[in-house]
Length: 257
Length: 316
Image (cartoon, rainbow over all chains, first blue to last red; front, side):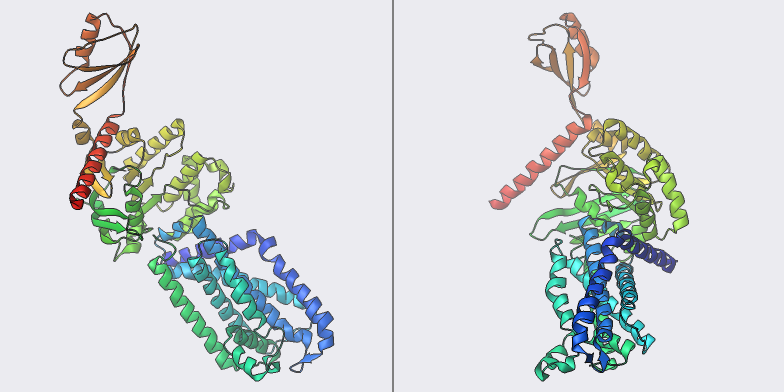
């Protein structure tokens, strides 16, 4: 009985979340496609043609997985951060708080919504990339597992950010000052093997390096890190961030006075 | 006796030390129409927030139909429908979406939710607006939307936190009829309002909260019966300087208005016969204030005096 109630509640939150970002598709789905097209044109065609190959792969093909992953990360994060914070700000989060919705359903609903947007944008970017490169698939399961886990990690991150946020500025600070630098330094545009040894070591603590490389392995069969390490990092982040999100919502941090 | 709501020793201390509730006890019977009154900042919304789990309590116990919110929160929540003071729906969603989502959070499937949404929106005269964005509604329509939303899961207890604030009198009366009907159908209603006339007309039982404590908790009839003096205003035809009424306190407000205090046991006939003897014709008569309002002011003032005495004693 309770499981049926939870299933309907989860479906309602997911439906609400998907409806939200599809209703404003010009703001949520189109910009990533345009941005990524520009990356392909500038870094792939114009600059990439002068770079030649990277890791034995032509530069344009090398950056595709990283660019797809970059859009998945950004969109999963920003979807949940803005949606949950808006719900707090307009106080319609109270609709869920007064209802018999278990906390895990709230987390799963919002994170699920973020994952769907992240993956949908990833799919759009993949389709755009087909205009520029012949995309090969080395291991589909690695691609699916990596994109699911990565979008879950960043959707959870966005949720935690929104829980603590008190203003709209607070939900743009982390993407601007943490996520973007980590993504650009996460091996999207280069192989970390090109870096001096010290910076290679530093890169090992950047979780995005593992995500981008696992994803790249799925397409191209090359990676700067081991797949086992990459999935361990991803699973650890999912578990830790989920636990934090659940604890915060259970205690009502940022939600209940 | 089945209680819809049982509150014992409920306390809330906010961050910063503000003691909003100082150990309140309250019982609301199933099927009751219950008024929870108090001045601004008395603790009404905090109490409602705790019952509906929007506010974390500091101490005490809350049970909804016997389900303790500490141990059986989800069961307790299924009985409750809340109409909060502030608009708290997504302003960018349509009315139908808001209602269907809300029903979904209570496990009501989409097909049933659609039927219920149609029923509620028609009853509350919002059906024509069902596909409009909520931000396009007037204040009164938004209030009605919140009532419709609270009813989507067929709650047993409906908590209304100032549901008629800012609503014009015509709509307010229509809402009173609607709430009476809901109560007659067996829904327990807990109402907070600043319109004491509303509470007097609708509610059977009442609690008055002031400064975080319950200063009165009784049934409406008994409370009104304790009123020992009522003040009436008389509009008189001609000047009535120095009108005197034996055994009554009379005040001249202006040349055409008298204010008369009538104590328990005294009758209006006595007033009128004395005025007639003095050749003063009465054109109209009205109560100076609502009876409950009189009592409310007295009780709240008494509570404030008592708490200031306690503070003074503490200081000594």
